[in-house]
Length: 393
Image (tube, rainbow, N blue to C red; front, side, top):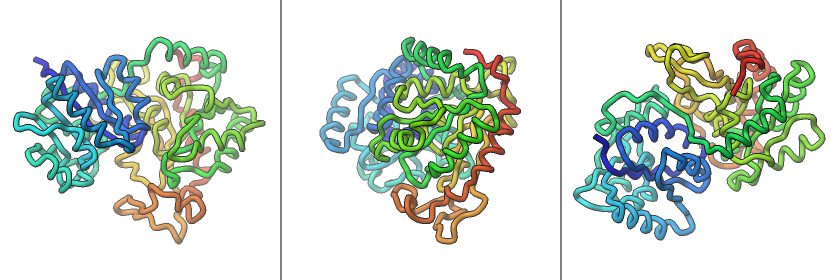
């Protein structure tokens, strides 16, 4: 029997939100109502999920956090929500959860919470979720946090409940641009963290090779406006691709339409860094064994995803690559070497400049990831992808 209502707190970056989608699907099998607290940058994706996966979406507003948290706590009490899951384990996320002896509150394990002491101070009676595996993917880590709540195995699903208008617009663009009739390569430019961004000059050179030497259709995708990186995608596309023959969708589509195009199979290969686009395109759904294009993983289950080339440098691909237990659909490309001045820790996979702008003008490790490396990965992917005539909606 389903329980009644659960509130999930998960305020972070947009790309991280993709890792939570299978968890929401799993919770849907147990709870009648799911509410979610997200950051401002995650809100557009969360609102897509209101079309059938989520019942309420609340935005963690830094400019009025105490007031917005109070409003969420009041709504939780008014709606008799008695189960709360905070996947971040911070004081600022903890204040969105009411206090009470009869509530089921779950926080990350001591090893995984970013502010364990503070989160425990806010909710001393909370239950700790299992510690995350040091070798597993974030998707598996979040699903393991549902131990005791979801007792039956639930197929991993990244499917989003797109509304009819979004799907019509996505199919209109796919048909108008002939995406399914050609070898179509999506290039995703930016990220909230500058240390993840591949130099734009490399993107330009890659697009020239794809078009002129490989006969591919190049599609630029990204955010038309994104404050954390000063609208990087739009600025770069205007400056470097204004007179180009590439198909530039950056200022023509919404995030919902982008998500649909990345996941529906209209594109041959998606290329991007550790961010939303790559996660959306390359993460594998668990499917039946007789599903077209399905591949069996070592765990005995079958999966299918879109082919992706993911560019990594300052973050750990073990945790953050597109979710692909088969190792078939996503290819990870890492720099062959790092600058002498680079302070990236190759053992812990951490970088002190991950979230700032140090790497914009200095020893940027992504500069050492070459165009030739990416071209080679795309060529291999094109050999593995269905021919354009077989990529149907």
